[in-house]
Image (tube, rainbow, N blue to C red):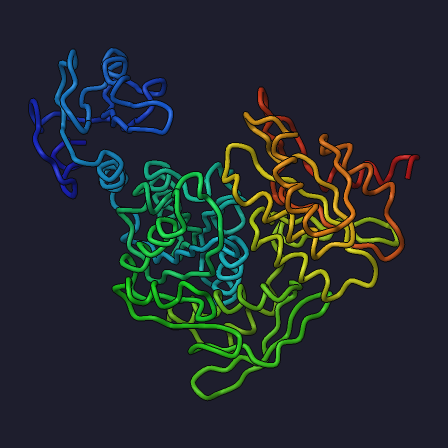
Length: 481
């Protein structure tokens, strides 16, 4: 492909060399660079791609895209202000602008993104549409699963996914849009039919520094879409409306354009009256918890904004299934219940335990930890919330990464102790699960929070397999239980 074609949408400051050369591939990791590649220098958080441009050229790169001139690079160099932004547009051009054949629905927010995307996918499929999905759990083309490593992939991988979807005649793509992807221009070359916002609570402050920065990143989505579907009950509603360039459809419980009234919370799901344009419809979703009402409204609003019939949307919602790792009940033949959930933020832990309390007959016993190398300020907050809402807590490891597990646990315990809840510390997560099962009582609901869909645990020096549903079932079937 000609370089000049790749640079059509890129703001180029200057070109050192010629733009008439041909490129056969794109890379931003020098280890993966091949002969004929265009190499993009990305300033990372630990390394700077500009330091590897010479290595990329030695491996055969014929063009380098950088934010400044680099010595000892004797190939065409394209100078840009923002190489991440440039990569998004270069990737789109390289893969033939695949989104022109796709209708994109982007969902952002701290909690509820994953479930909401699955609900939208399910509803669209009930209309006979071919749907792709991009998110935390996995990427999908209809029922075909493509492993996922980021909530929102880097722009190069994202455009490759879009091309794959377009080549497979996908019409709609529903995707989670993380604050990182918005801040780092991963979706800069995308335009969305619908952008939806679930909520915002404390998370990712290791990356954004302040809640104001975090919210500002989220708001970028609403300058990149035709319609915005925004939670009227969330504190960020006014800010997002003021900072949007699209028409807005609001939703909420007893508020907004789309309202859920007379909400009924059951152990097997939620029911509510849906109020829209002075008409009322009966709606239900087979996923328990008050937050499921908001997820349902996000999905209903998103598909309404696409122009679909409200009665069929409600019918499609009724048949939607739950999502792996989100209030997932582990099948065991015992007189207590084990639930796995991805809750790893203060709001997430509050929502899941509050929802469980709505239908719990016995104790609510919560096992949780916090991730290492992530926002430390949320740890005591999560500890206090879990302690206040649970009858007993087991504090353990999550993904400690490079931090000492006990150091993370000590941060959490500040809040747990303040709550006055009974608790036990077991650093090893496997042993913690073993303890909590061994001490379960009749009608207990045991919540394993934090890992959700993950099937691994990230330690200081390695990553190990760790699928909690498998661990629970093996422990339950062993002679000790």
